[in-house]
Image (cartoon, rainbow, N blue to C red):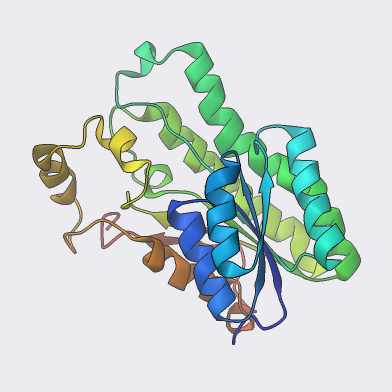
Length: 246
């Protein structure tokens, strides 16, 4: 019960990595609040975990404020905040990505971190404790061609994590990132362009361990970094990638 009594907010909690993280956290004693643009999906997970589901778009200030307010109204504190919600553009030459798609990727992957800080950091400063975990990507460490603006957004997240960690450490707040390789989540098809055996084989050939990441892989790492076992760890980007970035 490494998170016994902790309150954790997970964005993008209705599926994929977010749902996997929420399940592991509850198994270790936490209460979870799941934010997702798809309320129905989040509610299914929340019902299974005796948690709270909140509809919202992480790129919108009012929605992020509502998510934090819902968690505070329900529990009175926030011990852990997981910036998991993310998106990508389809693999293509950088100059072919439409401006509105570029804006969407940056809003969801980067502005969401800024907005979460605006609303959750004051809560954690008052508590003089807290953990923020940003789900970045190996794309921010070892970029793939055709995903330039997604790569850049995840590189931004990694740098933001380090800057946040330095600034917030004196307030008892730790900030880390996880850098997963592509996983068995709803976003996999968009990374591949088309989900075919041939495209999967080509992608897997770049991962020494020879498989995609899973929600449980991410959940295990998140559980460690958000627990007191990692009380001396802040500002890192941990690769969960089967050797992809070596």
